[in-house]
Image (cartoon, rainbow, N blue to C red; front, top):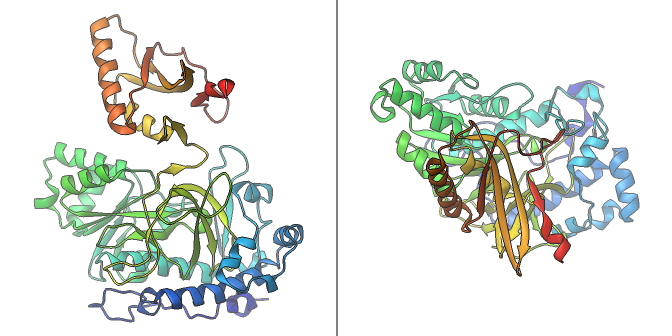
Length: 458
């Protein structure tokens, strides 16, 4: 069977719009889908869900899952029936490595991406040509939404290869029609030269790298407002706060739009901020979005934090049903002044399997790591210990010093400043212990960052 005649390419009847149907003056790249009412969106989702379920049953993994759950495609009659379907997890992808989740013959696939697999088998995602075309449409839709047009110059400072950020934005920017600069990651001096020489107007980068780029610009006497044509930043791929985004906008003198993606859902393009910057629009013509309690797996009310669960609706090679992303967020609304009715989600708060709850406050290790790594006096190894002392829950953060020192006053000042910054970040004041390098245990494989001793009191 050739790729051109692959019958699976017919599983989704709604046409893919490739091009600027509304014209360059339009705010919409795919107006037919971006401007759907809630009723129209849900009708389209149900149609695509039914076809996706049928398509999944060409795969042995899902055949077994459906049999265990005692359901058939005929059980999907309303959009709410999605909750009858089994969840899919990252472990399922690892257990079926490398191609056990494929729903088309391997000869009909044209690309794969995978995770690093540092904690086991990598997670492999397969794509047909139609999958890649739809992915490019999603990314182009996002970039168009924030005001980019064919006469813009788009510089991609993301890594290429197995990581999806590079190629995802590359193909999306090309689909939109921009001149693209595949600068890839790093080499800040070259990045700045390209920005100036090529008249770059938009950049895709992780937030921490934008900060580094600005530092190098300062060192080189380059003012991004005066010496460049930059006006749009697409930032994502690592957690960042609203305060960090605002700081980036102030430094660079441009608007910075939050982006969400994950390789299991193709990559970047799943969710993106519009010019209103009041949440990430998740494209419901491509995905069914659920927010569930990570413990009970039951849906939570709009506005309540829960785990993001996504079902693909336009995937040929590897459709995924109710994929547990482990990312925590909440629904902000289902309409927007920008004219789109696709659900708006809050920025990701962290991962459900990493969250600590201390005195009613949700805290993530990445928040603490982010603060600690701001201090050059500290090494990279740290340990967070939770205890209950006299009926009060407490947190102790032990962190190794990069270099030994006998300057007691300096250590006191450093400890005081770490406490202050941590309190600003997590709203609680932990105990902080500065220890010599090599004091804390080093784990083989994934580092153990949190020890919860409160369990012995429960």
